[in-house]
Length: 244
Ligand SMILES: C[S@@+](CC[C@H](N)C(=O)[O-])C[C@H]1O[C@@H](n2cnc3c(N)ncnc32)[C@H](O)[C@@H]1O
Picture 1 (tube, helix red, strand yellow):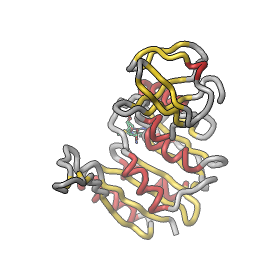
Picture 2 (cartoon, protein in one colour; picture 1 turned 90 degrees about the horizontal axis):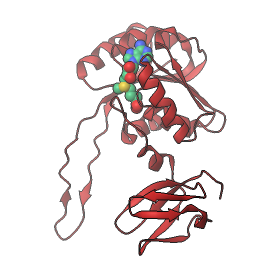
Picture 3 (cartoon, protein in one colour; picture 1 turned 30 degrees about the vertical axis):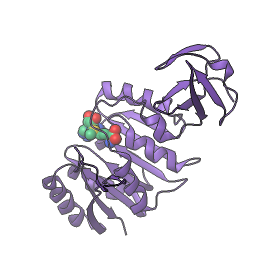
């Protein structure tokens, strides 16, 4: 196992991520000598508690990423991949980067030879997003540009994702930047934004226009089985359109 590798430690009650620095590090349950971590699957004792050493996924690592603006959750990012057929090698543009959660999700799936160029106009968000992308080990795939997406120059794209105010103003430019068969996916919290985006998609000759919402509901399965009462039901609508 390499030095500086992130490790997910899974215990009975707690799970957390640490870095294998080969030094003694503090964890939420006490100090641990990371030199003792040799391979995934091994058991580790910390303060009389047992933890399993697991190789974290990008989704595990996202929990350590800092969120500044509102992020796109995995349930919504996943439907973008499912609807468009996103796969390795795709060339994508994303805006605005925000906390880079969507950019990271896309980057993880277009590996090893795809790319995500993500545009963000707010400098503070750019700095945080770059840190998040480094934490996730996606620096070679996801590039963040400090600029308005209205200045984008990329062409022949497979996918453009927009999660920003006034996304409808980018629809015309997106059409030019996509390759034939490429997809535009717009995330909008409000239905008024969906209407504005859809109108532009029609005006610009996009095909296969569809708006969906993903409602994820957890269930408590026990003696008395019922949905877990949820605080969040609505996140956003996704409007898809294809350049044909
Ligand atoms: C809700 S956040 C995006 C969150 C992101 N999808 C994520 O999952 O972390 C919206 C971002 O769009 C940025 N933004 C708004 N208009 C923009 C533009 N024209 N070009 C680039 N970024 C823009 C804002 O600064 C904000 O950070």
